[in-house]
Length: 242
View 1: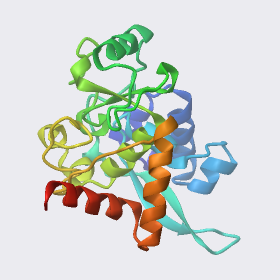
View 2: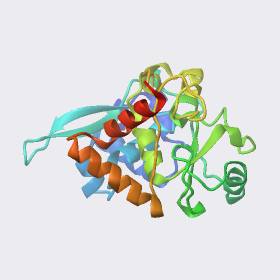
View 3: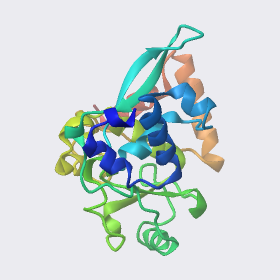
């Protein structure tokens, strides 16, 4: 099957050594495609899109399609090499691991808290994330010596950011770094849009004694047959006279 893969893609594949993307690449070279089920059953990857993202992070184009499961007849996700013209240069090696010293520097700059919610977290629960997604800018515009290019996020915020960014046209097609920099997911302190949409948001967590306030808001919202978010908006509009 590898002799049917474009030479430019083969050249990139030969340079990949990390285990997870290497596993996916070897399967694609032998079989031409890999399904989400194969990633889970054959290779034990519980989150198949992450394994595919590891390959894309190497600059190798991968396209997603739907196929029919041979036994159940249901449609499942599958992946194959994409258009060689969509190769992203400068990505060989994939994401680089961050040093403990750099994480400590970020905590010293921002505090041990989630960038989106502002809630304090134990440092071990915080993850370093690029303000501008790696898939848009690659590693070339980032340096560990520039903490302003990074965020500290807890796992739930990182998942929310990843999902939103992956639906964004700029992430999928345009890959304009400036558009990303003006997005909430890159600059929650001051932003013009969220994934290209004219939206503003506030993330709030209630902890400890604050939970009683949340439960009171929840009960009031339920009494109005209203989502709690809508109830809070009504209270805020009333408070500011809007």
